[in-house]
Length: 297
Image 1 (cartoon, helix red, strand yellow):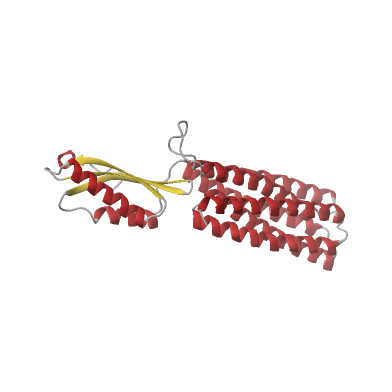
Image 2 (cartoon, one colour):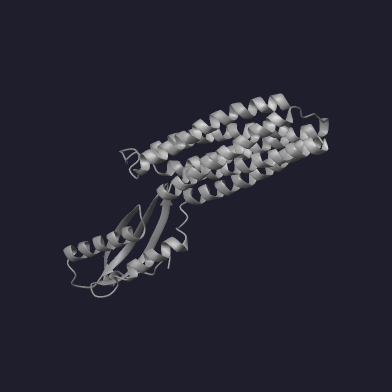
């Protein structure tokens, strides 16, 4: 299946799943009075907003370049991931505040069995949907889906933590455990939010590709050096949404015709795209006597 409908379908599944989970957790939280379950419901509400952002961002990011966005719209995926991270951090702050209030004022958890059933079902659902989003993100290179998948995996872990808390409250009768687990939930969400925010930020400021992606590109270019290709410099590469962008200056020996240089440049571009999928390559042609120091070597 093509990447665009695959990403859209994954984002739509995330929206549907989070909508159902919000209703279930909210009802369970009100019935039981558990701040941990209510915190989990807040987390799912944030998940829903994030899923909506992801849905629209992956659709827009796949639109072709136009007169106002001549380099395309792919960076919307990175922006979406950053917004999702901020939502996570806001949600963590809300949950922490509620948990601290419950610890200070006290409270009682009722109908624990019903709450446990809802939380367990939510954990399983988020593991399934989060796994599907993560696999889709890997196959399409979508930063937005990767963030949403990581978000849902965190939500599943949160739900398992809440489930353990409810079991302990039922066994021991210690009501403070409910609020303490809600605080731990806030901490887990905060860690995930910071990780996603840092990743999105690195892409938005055009951090270079990691060595495991850049080194093979450099090896491809160096394999052409010799004969008509005198050398290269200023090899640059970055992530743009689900794409890679690579550009470099390729130097040609004296006497090389423009047609020959152009043909060799196309061979280099094709070889790079064969080594690194979904990549746009731009080669600047230079004569051999214009050699300059490599700024990035």
